Structures are given as structure tokens and as C-alpha cells.
Figure 1: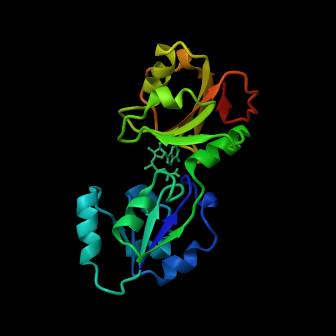
Figure 2: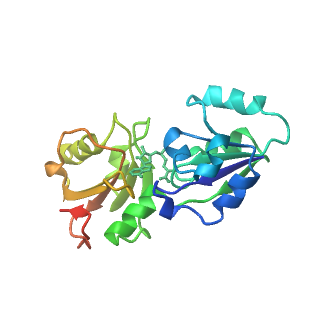
Length: 213
Ligand SMILES: C[S@@+](CC[C@H](N)C(=O)[O-])C[C@H]1O[C@@H](n2cnc3c(N)ncnc32)[C@H](O)[C@@H]1O
């Protein structure tokens, strides 16, 4: 069985209290190095970095002996642009999903920004349909290095739209940074791991000390 555990945005305080029992009974704990770094010291020896390429990961998981209890750590929530979908599709009946706090949810709470009318999307390793996304009032995006905050903001500028762009970098970590600006003001610079929110102008943001607007 593969228990897929969402670790939340990263800081241990946003993990589930029940995780320790799953780590205790696991024979093997997989994840990226960032995920494995969140493991309590006494479970570290069970940790192993999972193959990055999906084809390699599939082969690796198929090689595991029958009955081996595997915990797979993933960031945020497994079903929000995470490995949960791929794992349940590729290992039907063998996967148990444990939800975590998505980086999108975490950022929404930092901003006191309701998610009721939010559309969730991703530019992580894909080209989103910006004509569609930018027709919506509130869009959350997980991103990657190729299509990040600046490139996304430029899609708004190109269309002459009036939108506010929120960028949440390294959320929940000590160097977390949340910036709020118009699309025109988004800088062309390297960004740390981030979530972008594009929202119609006019929302009165609640700001706190980690937010620089
Ligand atoms: C493969 S997606 C996984 C999303 C995850 N399932 C979730 O619910 O947050 C990876 C992307 O999530 C975002 N992300 C995850 N953790 C983050 C964090 N602590 N701070 C900022 N962005 C984060 C980044 O856009 C990153 O490239």
C-alpha cells in the first residue's frame, strides 16, 4: 500500500498531527529532499528520495516487494496539482490519500482572501490557457521557473487588463514573502518557489507583517 501524505506548504506546524503513526508503521518513506527534511529525526533512516521522472518512479514502485508499507510525502495537498492523481491512476486500489494544506489555501489565509469563487490552475510544466484564466475574477496558480510571476503578469499586461497580482514565495518558511501589486509592477527577477493569485482590481486586501504591498 502507498499512503500519500500531503505535508502542507512546508513548515512542520502545518502538517497533520496523525502523521507520526503512519511514519512509525511505514517500511519506506519516499519524497523529495525538501519533503524528507520535514521528517522527525527518528524516522529519517526510512526516508529515500523518490525518482523524479514519472517513468522511473513507476518502475521503482513496481519493483517494491508485495506488502511493503510505503509512505509517499508530497507538498501541499496531494490532489491539488500534486502526485495524488498520477499515483491513484497508475496504482489503482493501492493508494490511500491523506490531505494536506495546499500552498494555495495557505496563501489565501495569509490574505484573508475567500476561495469560494477561486479557480485553481497551474503553469507548472505546462502552458495554461490565459484567455480563459484571465476572463475569471480570481485565479490561483502554482508555477515553475519557466512560467513564473513575471511571465504570468505579462499575459495580463499584453491584454490591457486591470488585475492585481499576488505572489507568495516560500510560503510558511522563515523567508516567506508575499507581494501585492498591479500586473505592470511585477518585477522581472528570479522568484523563489511561489503561488500566484490574479484577481480583478478592487479587492481590499487584509495585510499582515509578512506582506509587503
Ligand atoms: C507540483 S506543485 C504541488 C502543489 C501542491 N500539491 C499544493 O497543494 O500546494 C508544486 C508547486 O506548488 C507551489 N508550492 C508548493 N509549496 C509551496 C510553498 N511552500 N511556497 C510557495 N509555493 C509552493 C509552487 O508553485 C511549486 O512549484
